[in-house]
Length: 210
Image (cartoon, rainbow, N blue to C red):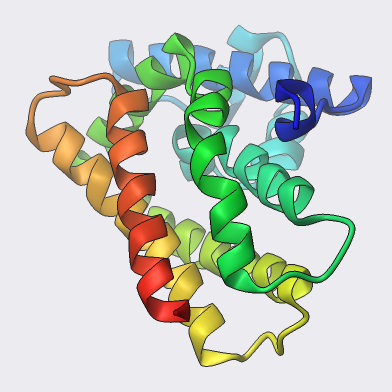
């Protein structure tokens, strides 16, 4: 399986949307750093980014998501769906396919820009209660998306206990990895932290589905 097959190429519309959202987020984070999160309104971010406030709400939904948006979340889901596409598979089969692909995928999606914005985002999660609360909601929603993707790929019922465990392990182990990374003062590369996290996840899921 080629690298281009592993990481699906978005349509031109999707690419432009991701580029726009990433640019707006960078503008917002710069303003928050300079003036303080609560002192900067969505309207001020929109003006600085050269877009309308309605565009920001359409893209992000809430001010908190200006901080929390992470383009690697949908990319990760796309990879899972692509790797498992074409036929219903046993979960252990999916894990066998996934393990050797992890380094390639991480090199593709965890860029220096993603690492920078992740460091900044974690600071706001720690210091702004409403951002922290919204992050928990975001990760619960992502856990649900992973569960449904696993159900689609394996042909299992979406309420299957093992699938719920698999989704929870996948998401919250990643959260633990980010907390660890921040706790070390971001000593390692984010890509390397994620590599260790994913290896732990795959090993745990092998135990669940053996």
